[in-house]
Amino acid sequence: MFYEFILLVFVFSFFSSFIKIVKQYELGVKFTLGRFSGIMQPGLNILIPVIQSWRRVDMRVKAVDVPDQEAITKDNVSVNVNAVLYYKVADAENAIIKVEHYGYAVSQLAQTTMRDVVGEVTLDELLSKRDEVSNRIQEKVDKATDPWGIKVESVDLKHIELPEEMKRTMAKQAEAERERRAVIIKAEGEVIASQNLAKAASTLSKTQGALHLRTLHSLNDLSSDQSNTVVFAVPLEVLRAFERISKKG
Image 1 (spheres, rainbow, N blue to C red):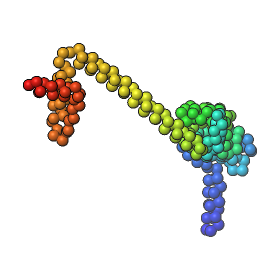
Image 2: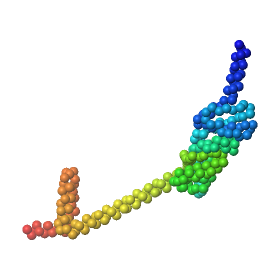
Image 3: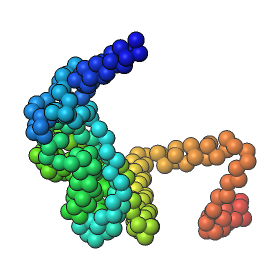
Image 4: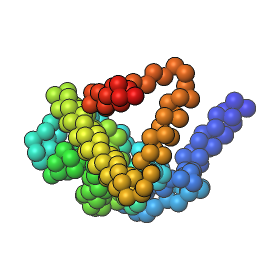
């Protein structure tokens, strides 16, 4: 009975070694006597032990974190840049046969390409046209990985670290720009105010009695608040004229 059980286990193990299960999001690259012999589709597959072998390939989109890379821009500014790259295997056969450890290869290629592309643009372009720089990196990495059966979906620059000296310089530049805009806006406001005052003065001078009405209106506004103290400056000649009139009277 014991030997029968051992025999049964051996037979089960032997036949189960023929069966390989490929998951829905995978493909299997099959080799017969070391040579590529086909692609194993998702589901149940039969494989002859010893004679045949296989490699499992994940076909889902993968994210690769491209670590900080020190690069020098076209205008000789040193920056640290990192990014995230999204790719997937488009051709399982080439991904296994044409390159060793395709994930590591894509990561290394992305690092060198990112440094090269950053070196082709100025700092202002890197900061203001981040999407264009990301697209350029994606295009170059995608083109280089085509023979490997890899499709690069996108590249996103996550962070651009500037030197401290450059940060201080940019802060001073931004402050100076804000002050310049404030002076311009204030000057434009004064011009508009002077134009409005000129129009008001012209209207008052052309309309008879308008100036007196405006004076009375101003006095009425001042008298509405008892805390206001109004001081009238009267010319000395006017006071002397009143004095002469009073003496004649």
